[in-house]
Image 1 (spheres, rainbow, N blue to C red):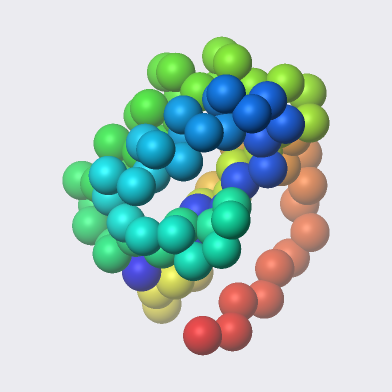
Image 2: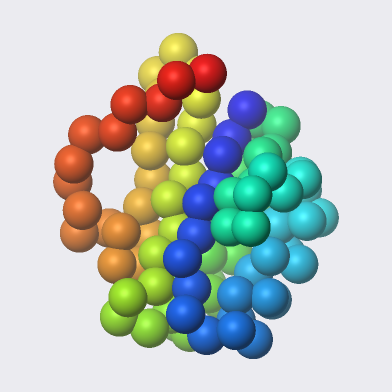
Length: 91
């Protein structure tokens, strides 16, 4: 499973990003989506983040992707990329 959490200040951009994520999974909370782990979906989401959304992000906007597998890899975008604190995920 992949968890994607985001904090985007601009209402229009936040709504656009949420609608994009709805194509792949379901909303757990207002700004958290759950997506079944599939490398092709994950790569598509990351590519769209890099090519479209990152260009529109403000200085405080962030997206964090939690890959809840044996490796529990975390990818950070926007402001969150500068936050290197450890995160513990309890499933």
